[in-house]
Image (tube, rainbow, N blue to C red; front, side, top):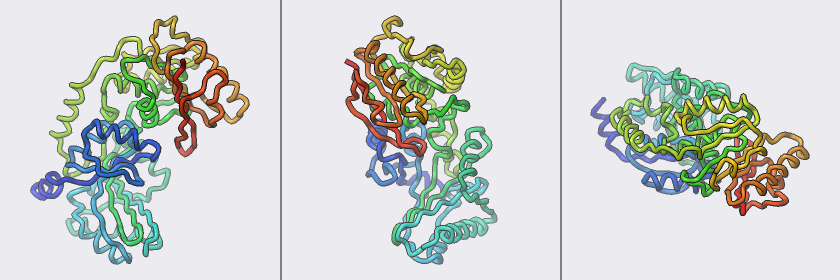
Length: 400
């Protein structure tokens, strides 16, 4: 078994994909270039790249904007269910997945002879089960409902176990089998156990930081910090700490997992940690309870000592009184359902930015584009993004 793992898995170059929303592909690609990953092409799913297992480990550990890393295990021609079964059962699954880890098979069909995803899933699972039974083992399958997905991610973060996702995409007669390598979605860094309100995803917060023009030498103010996601992501960037440093990954459960390689990557990452400039990372929120939650999350992320917290309304903050040089102010207002109330809030924010933050950059999130068109300040660009199933707008400002 060890010889087969070394020959067929560890020594080989494999194809992987960083799954990322299309609107974030460009920023994720720049991250991958800085990591010196061997990029092949952009696809509908995200960005395809190749490398040995070490490249997969690095991508999971360091990518701040990707949602998941998958391994393209095999490409197969698929016609009838019998053909799917026959080709699936021949794959060396025992070299890739641990039979003790529950498996969830997700099937996506487009223009295929296989018309029913449920029947295709059944054929695939039967083949996988037969492969392991021939080796004296068995596989436990999960159906993959929404509730089970939630349980899976919580279990990963709480150390209770993993679920191995296997994805089968069939378009016409061409099928691609992919293995999840990440486990919980990569926005689940492992530090935000508690939250205040509806937090922004860590992957999106990191993407907006990377697109804003902010550098770690500049001050960063999270003016409505909530559970602290944006300022914590800024602190991780400033300290050069990989976003995956405090969590576990599914590939660590694979038979092929290389413990020494992973330990080396962590040691190298820790050696590259930097100390952010004191007093430049600031979290502000009018809710003292939210600030307490944010402080706890920052401590868990390992950046608590570098962030200064203030339980005050953002409109009471004057960076000049705090002797802050121009930097980036990040605002994710608690936008509600009443548009008129939203307009009033956003106009107040625009006025405060124009009055007190001249020379700064700003990133402001809103549910509607018109809320970002302040009377006194106009964004240099507005981007529409998807976040948690909703469409949001993000304004980028240069406050002159």
